[in-house]
Image 1 (cartoon, helix red, strand yellow):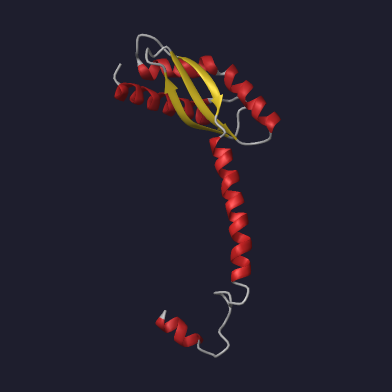
Image 2 (cartoon, helix red, strand yellow):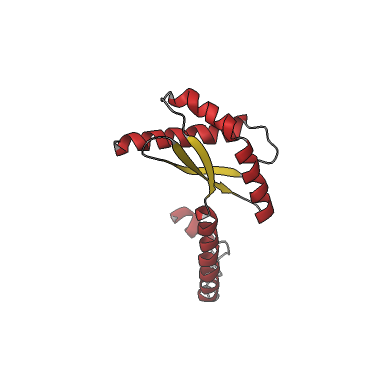
Length: 142
């Protein structure tokens, strides 16, 4: 099958799954879920929906259990949208990429924060007034 068709079907599955989870699913277990991407097999029989779940490990397991419980409902929404011969069997997979990138960003900011603070310790902060009385000059010219 052509790869661009698979990409279109994958994108449609991602859209339908995210809209259904966000707006139509009334399960209190399912919260803090972001659908990051979807992958479809070449024969359109199986689909993996990658989700990022915020929260602790136990909250993630509970949310994933709720998503697995709602699989049939999400597949029925997919069947209406896709109108293909077969509706793909949906499987939810936890995507840790978002959490890992947030952790890396935090570590980088932490490392840069210590360097930036030590480098700017001798300089005045941008909000402080200059000691030579040139406030009007700074506001008029800046």
